[in-house]
Image (tube, rainbow, N blue to C red):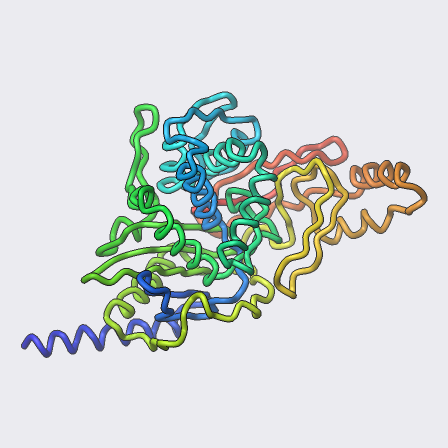
Length: 395
């Protein structure tokens, strides 16, 4: 009887893994053995994807790195800036000048995916979120995340903020190995902030047997993302799923792939390791869901010219002289630059600013297709008016 039950369990796990590849929409994923980095399962693991709030795992990595180096302490008091207080949901709802500790910010990010807490940490560590994003990218490349580039500390939509499942698995693996003294924070189900108990939103951490936690993420561009870590019977796994069509689907995909990997039912190649996987085929990230504003780029305000060439081939060179603009259409920005005649530097700059004010308009508002969306107000001045730009959520 025991053998029959075991056989049925094995057949069920095999069936679930096979069905997950057929019945679900396009997604990208990877499962690795956290003890040695061997790749147990992968689907388009080196495909470029929008990270959404998986970005915050790097924000946490940078924080843990600073803690370990003694540059900051868990009980250091942080102060919310105007920029931090203006972040859209998900957030704690910090007001300008409000205080919280480094530990509070860590727990707020892990349990609530708090954008305002992420920006407070970024500004504490690097003075500005823009500086912090550059540091995040440099750290990512030093860890071997060659197809990853960050533009902000939160994962809010930006066409040039990209990663791959393989790169995110590397980050999760490094966080687990390099910061064992802080790793336990990922398992938090809730935390108390100023007398209020705030419950976590990660259903994998709450429900999967042996779950150690990690991070969720969601935008219209990315779909529903998830990084999960778990242990069973002495075996430790790390998984990344990107592009779930619903929140439920990302959890189902992760749990099915984890189940099959724990049961040793995946097509394991002993030669394939996350450190030796090819990183040459990232391509262009898909826009996963039929919601939001696919043509819009949302970035942090810049006070100087930005110029960056990504590591992967299919993302074009970024160069903009429009200053302090939060949201612009790529085509509009091209038209604005085309209108600038290079007579001399001062005149060109004046023309650029004048043209930008006249030409660049915020994108129209599209209806949300998901109940998980939260309305974000991006105050963008155009021809003397302020409009709401898009709906975002990063659960």
